[in-house]
Length: 220
Image 1: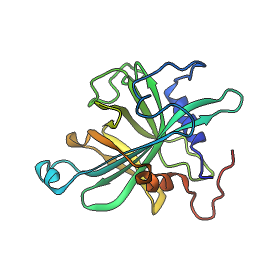
Image 2: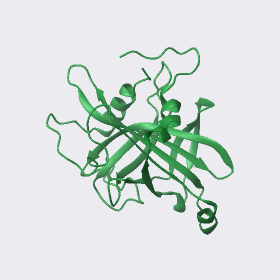
Image 3: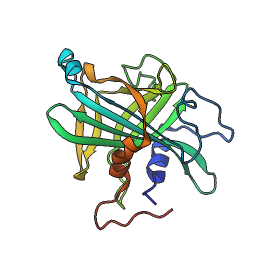
Image 4: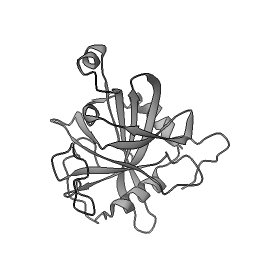
């Protein structure tokens, strides 16, 4: 089996201080991906040269999001949403990756000081995703945060909106131990992705679940 998200997702959910209730209420993302353990969904967008020419300040050339529901916890198991992001920037063909756990909240866009978490996101409720500083591919799991983002349903079940903050910690597949601080300008904050075949997320899954050489896969 591929390396599970369990440790990292549980960590993200704890950081968000959001509890999973015994009976889960429906939320707007349920028709995008069914909240059942093992369910996956893939969303992607590649910007063509014409779009990038018309938006010269946009650095992002491609983005892919892989969503997967996982079961975490032994004595009190809960089903939580894992989110992995792949992003490519102008002038650098190497894809950069980020991984974390997401949770629906009516106050998702407020931090502990009641400040707006993601300025580009105008609503209060949504799925806030706490990203890790590196994918969970090492025996030693760092508690370092990698930043936050918000995802939400687009106009229909086949679209996904992604809202980014000022910066996100990412890694490249060739060296996932090296942390990269990726900055986002005003033209790289809001993205509309479209549903695609799950095979289009295979590279994202591999990048965030396959251990480095010599590192044994964690066992459940």
